[in-house]
Length: 277
Length: 66
Image 1 (cartoon, rainbow over the protein chains, first blue to last red):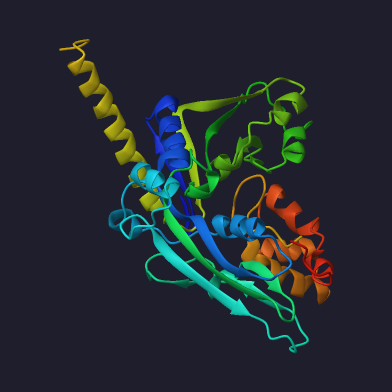
Image 2: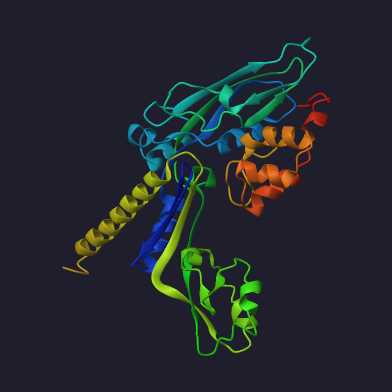
């Protein structure tokens, strides 16, 4: 329904809430992306602590689409990271080298775009994120090692900032009970202006029904009890907002594949154990 | 300290928008309108901008002790 490079809203029908929620949770915590995991600081004479800079760099989203095929899976690379082995099949390296001459007389801001990626496929999504400020005479030199990871390990690897589903309202106005000439209270009180008068009757604007938040303020405002607010069964609005690491479409596809794999794994395990035949 | 890279609550990247926000607000624009313009929709992200205190330039005046 809605689509821009970072955000999609899907209108899904005939799907049960449990299934949709499983997909949503897979999106948040199981779809891998690239993020800086370890940094090696060779020189930092700025006023900021190494840890503070490392934390900021870790949160910078990195483009991950080709990296998904190119680098090894998060679990393998996590072990490699713990033993400080930065092998090229797990890690993409970004180099940051910047200095401010002692007599410059001004501060310079170091941006995410100043990090030079050794692998052009893994680079910061946004170039203008301020990382450090260097005063005169300050210098920073570091190597940042990025790897694939999952949101369940650290939120910086989550491909989305928000992923949610919401109900779609179904509002019924009983024409026998409704008295638009004397009342019309619902028209004025609705925060989304969903009601209008058509041929002397109060009707709901069908095109904008998705905006209804199910607040039921109209039900309370109606003196004759003519309005009934319910929601449609097995029909939802599903929204994904990407951090930019992966396009929303890819996130959804990956999530479905991962979920499918997990279910197959469960089935195989059940067969092996002889629980089912 | 410096403006955060991401929103504390929802995790949306916001760091790259700070400088434009600051420039435009200092030029006299209404902060709310600037945020609408930059596409900062949720109130969790919006409060990151309006409540931010830039103290990193103060810290810069002091030498580092390590």
